[in-house]
Image (cartoon, rainbow, N blue to C red; front, top):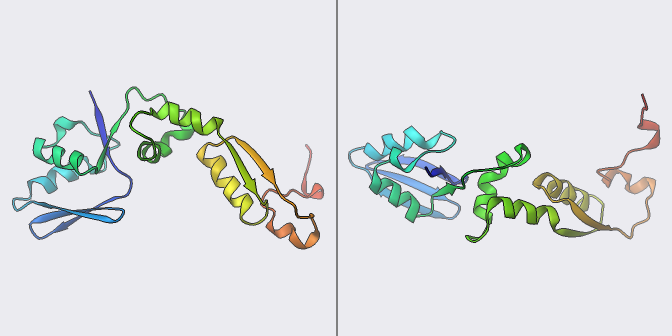
Length: 163
């Protein structure tokens, strides 16, 4: 049975006789004079995932056609490290790519970072957290006392305590 989730950046607001969905720069309005759709959305909105059968067919089709929900791949064999990244990965990948293929491609990409100071090390840190593993780091600066404050991964020998 297929499972679905709302996209990460979807904000749902209730307006008079309608529900307003905002996703990034687009704003989509759904007429809901009876309030039935509002109740159905509240029922599934905070769940980790939901099935198509949990929503009215016309509401489900509306959400799917307006690209407000994502189909979860099953079975999901994600390392616990990537569980929270799943919705982002799902939005970032092309239709012919699976999540697992996407993660493998991230892990195998070689990233070149020019400059390992204040910005380069922050970029490196973020990319490591996203799952990238292979890097080429180039920095032409001479390491001096005056620029150590910008070295995010600097460890001064005297600070290391060996137990």
